[in-house]
Length: 363
Image 1: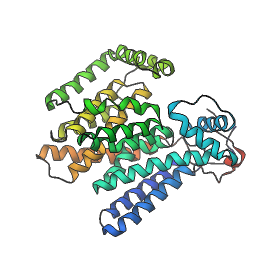
Image 2: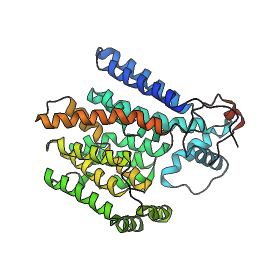
Image 3: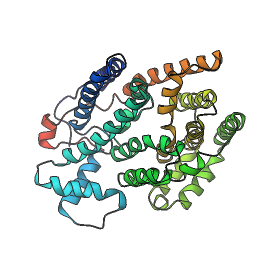
Image 4: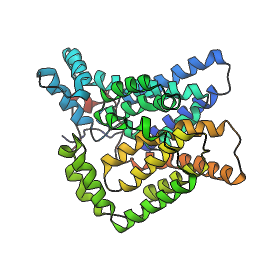
């Protein structure tokens, strides 16, 4: 059904949310410890209400409403990562348009873990900049469950570093009950503890770029999809998009950003450095395949704690300091760029006439 009213300009509204978020996190770092909790609550409330009260914003929004209607009225065989959605759908089925409460639940998880983990490092502003700059804020409006699972796993890097395998697996179970893709992060506990030299990592990233340019990665992606349970039957059709390559601003600049991040991280941050390295490899070979690109973000989350550590310590050289400044500029630029890039999707709330009429945009 067509929209009946003009929606609010996306760039302006999202830009205000971004600036408010950065201002509050900046204030959080300058005030007394006793007042930090209040600032965090205000920040959470702003982000939670803004995202939860939206209507038909995000490509998958309509699909989530259909899934709610189905689970609210049927009792099908439930997949591992949908029992929470199913349970919530049954609970809120007694409310008109109860899917708003269900989506709000996942939104709450996303921002609770983001703010919680950022507050631990005392550099919440860096976490918020990464969240916007790496396009995760916009993604949280679309792939709602997967972003929630990712934010839960933000705490996993510390658990791997401290070798708390039981706590790590508990976190994996929680995250995979939100989105099944989190299960694929399980081997990270062992893989991220492998020691590789800086030269090997940089060479591997450059070599992978060459493979992508030559089109060799098409067969690699095909093998991954055919060998991975669950995904091989659902996303196999995406393999055909792998033969497309260009040096778009977003893709090319992010590859450079990841190279710099891998280069400047010290060896003592083994887990974080390896995670960014592996995430870089997966991201590079994912070009043209949205689902593999999304999976790479589980590993690239290491940028959050890694950057927080670097900003709180001195750099080993001026070259690494310059690289860090370039990364900061990159994130700031793309925080604005990503919002502008989504300007074709207007923002509207559950208080709009379209929500009252349940008038969804054409897909």
